[in-house]
Image 1 (cartoon, helix red, strand yellow):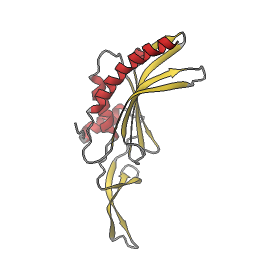
Image 2: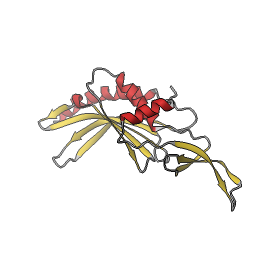
Image 3: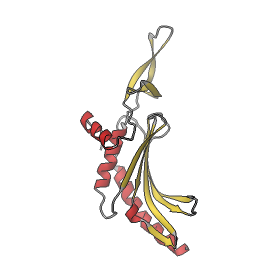
Length: 194
């Protein structure tokens, strides 16, 4: 499933999350020389059209994945997941739009392992325009261990794809489903240890 949303749908995503910065990335050729007349071969710059900042230098095989597209994909996938209660979705842009994280929590799935020992399933989806991260989904559980906020992250499933040519995103839904199933198994194991 290759996703690329229309400008209207992307605008709708930005309206639903007004506190989140969404860059407007484009691929631009790179020139060099005293009077830029020579083009750097097989290389392009990812430019944010909102502020004219260069986000990264990439190969000409790189495919831009708009943050709005990822967020819409995650919304579509989570709307198809039944039986796990309300899903809290929190997107955020990092490092002036170079990186993006979507955090999903399943608060109604919180389980008690022992008295005052609760775990909550969580999914983090990461992508970037500065090449620091490929499109990655990590599903796991956060277990609070101390009143100072210290906890343990247990990862059950991981999904990752590079931003090259065609980006297949359908596997992420399977990762979430398998992760939720793994969560229930892990809770039973932790209860045995407690």
